[in-house]
Image (cartoon, rainbow, N blue to C red; front, side, top):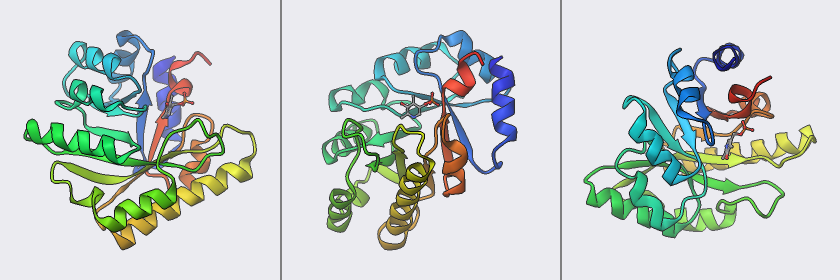
Length: 216
Ligand SMILES: *Cc1c(COP(=O)(O)O)cnc(C)c1O
């Protein structure tokens, strides 16, 4: 079932869009099923769970952290994480940079931007992010490299609103690339319910959980 789901989604998206298989709460056996047909990029939302799966599973898996990350948990995942998609504060960015420095590595990150209506969702708001980029702090950390932007649309069936929010994320990404960080290349947006819309709005990376791992 997992393998059929993966193949079906893969066939429905452009080849240059990266699909992150969101495996939070899934057992290692489910991840291996996806791995066995070539899936290598997986996303997790809890540092402890991520660490234990990293320890159990093949070492060529590319792990993405997609959930809110507390600064005191950075050290659990810093040695092996491929991309932290959920950098939502300057304090977290500084903690990642410091730990990466200690490990003598560079950690790739995405800046999470809050565009949805729910106040509960995390992320920088656009004005705050603009200020930090203007100050140059986020772009000048030597052991943390900003690769782009991540965001989530509101949990709603209102397609127009979802499209507006993805379009906002796209313009924030374009603005950062044009004004501040010309090397950025990742716009991570789109989940099971809305990835087709996200891709139409310029997404380069989608994060899919339930459409892969839930029985359909
Ligand atoms: C859980 C999660 C996803 C995947 O959501 P699905 O609706 O199951 O595809 C994507 N992104 C983030 C940040 C998540 O927490």
